[in-house]
Amino acid sequence: MKRLSLLLLCCLIITAGVAQEKKRKKPASPAYKEKKAKEDAKFLNKQWWLGLKAGPNWSKVGVEKSYSVIAPTNYEFDHIAKQYKNYDLVGSQATLEVTFYFKGFSFSFQPTYQHSRFLYTNSYEWTSDIETTNHVELDFEQEQKVDHAIIPLIVKYDIMGNKIRPYVQIGVYSAMLINASKSVSVKGIDNAAGGVNEFTEETINLGAKDLFAKNHWGLMGGVGLNYNLGNNVRLNFDVLYRHGMSNIVSTKNRYDSDRLSGVGDVMDDLTLDNLNISIGCLFPLRFLSSGFKTLDLK
Figure 1 (cartoon, rainbow, N blue to C red):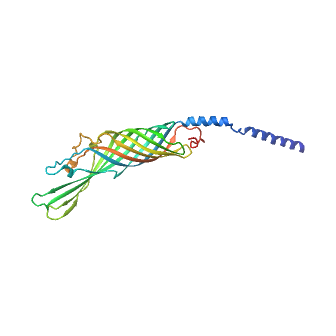
Figure 2 (cartoon, rainbow, N blue to C red):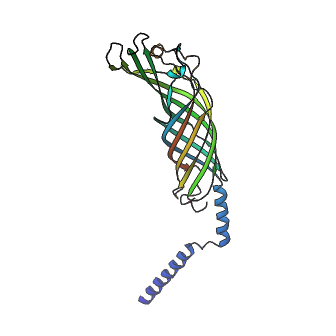
Figure 3 (cartoon, one colour):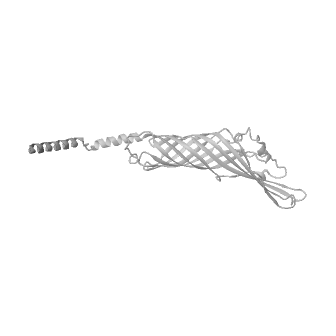
């Protein structure tokens, strides 16, 4: 009986070993590996990406035509012209990116909420014709805050295709005005009373949406890079320059603000440029499998 039991136990062990061996996968042949690599590469040549990115921006304005509520009679207009401080104030933007990639080229739709800020200053001076020591100086500083919804269409080209993938990009955009505000601060020196009297007026803060055009458009270009994490997700660093091609100021409502006209302020015809820097994350919308890694195939 003991010998029979031992024989049965040996048979069970052998049967289990054979069954386990059958379950083991046979090593893939070189032809199979080559075929799978071609299929994976073909898959990666066409991909949709979805992501979010955000960052700071700096603004520059171009003056197409200057305006003023004060008309000089005995001196040149340049003495009271506005002085714009470009790339001085920091704004921000947030972007939703939807990109279709095909063999090195990407066609990207990137709706963006953009908050821009820019500043200009100007000065006025009054001097008595009788006593030149009696004069008044007024210094104005005007800050504009403008929010736009940017609707761009962008074409990208990947320069290289490794773990770090730099690219160049160009495009065109349309901007729709969301909101705008303006603040005006006034400082001065009054020598009219015979002594030096420095003063600062209370800052004027008011909504300025009516002073800006509802829409404008422009061109854009820049560079960036994607860093492949190896788990089908990419980190993105993006530098983009937007160059405005049309007037951002409402020509119809230029003089409509009594408070601004009362302190000698009126908007010039302006174009708006922005230097944008963004970081974000992109996710593929098409996966091969849960264990698939992209970084070794490009």
